[in-house]
Image (cartoon, rainbow, N blue to C red; front, side):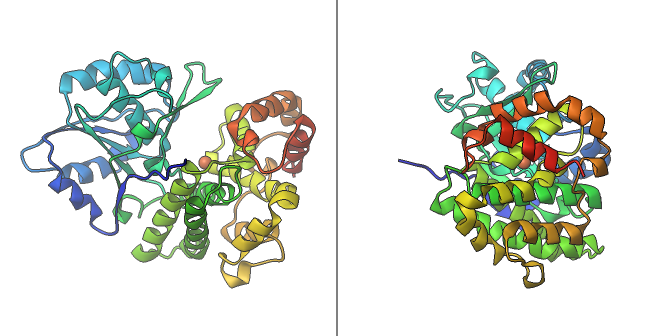
Length: 375
Ligand SMILES: [Fe+2]
C-alpha cells in the first residue's frame, strides 16, 4: 500500500485572492524580515477576509532551530489563530509547519513529529503555505527541517498531517526574485525532479511530476537569465518547482542531496548551489543503475541542450544559466575542504538520500564524488 499526498494547490495570477474566501478570522503569518521589508507580507494581508485580525511573526532565521520554534509557542497561543500562513522560502514554510503542530498539540514534543505518531491536528487552525522562491518545494512536502540549536544537525520532522491544507502559487510573490536566488532555487528544484525520478521509492505518480518539472524548469529559467520579465515564464518555473516538490516528497531525494547537505552543513553556501554542483557527477555515478531513466529525462530538456547522456545535458543547461560548477567558484578553499573530508563523508553517509540512492555508495565512492567538484 502506498499513498500520493498533496495539498490543494491554487496557482496562477491573482491566486492570492483565494485567501479572501477562507472561513477564518484570526490569521497568523510566519515569515522573515526580508519578506516583510519587500512588502510581500503586506500583499498577503491585503487579501485576507474583511474584518479579520492578523499578526506577523516576522523574524524567522535562515535555518530555524528547535529553540526558535519553542520560543514562539507563547505568542502563537495568546493570539489563538484559526489560520496559520507560512510565507517565504523553505525556512519560513518549515517553521510554520512546526509552529502549527506545537500550537495544535502543546502536549507533544517536536521530536514526536514522525509518520508513526497520530498527531490529530486541525482542531484549532488550518495551514496555508505561500512560497516566495521557486525551488524548495516545501509548500508541497510533509517535512519540516529544523536545526538543532548548535546547527550541527538538521532534524527532518515528518508527518503526512503537516502537509498544508492549501499551497498558493502566485507569480506576484516571485516576480522580483534576484537572479542568483532564482537560479540557485531553480537548480535545487531540478535536482529534486531528477532525484525523485531515480530514488528507490520512485513511483508512477512521482515520475509524472518529475518529467513535467524538468520540462518547465529547463524551458523557462534560461529566458529569465536574459532578463525577460514575462509573468508566464515566471509562473511556469514556479509550477515546475512545486511539481518537483510533489515528486520528491512522494518518492525521495538521493545522493546529490546527501553530498549537498553535508557541504551546506560545513559551509554557508546556498542549498541549491550545494546540491546542484554534485548533480552531474551523481548522474554519472548512477548511470549503471539508472541509465534508462536518465535517458528518458533528456527529452524533457529543450532540444538545443540535449546531449548523449543526462550529465552532459545538465552541464549544458548549467553553462547557459552560468551555474557555478566547483567549490572553488563558490569561494571554498581547497586545502580546508580536503582537511574536512572525513567529516564531509561521514555527514553524507548518514543522510537518508544515501540509503535511497539507486546505486550503493560506500565511504570510498562518497569521497571520490566530493573530490570531483574541487575544480
Ligand atoms: Fe533540495
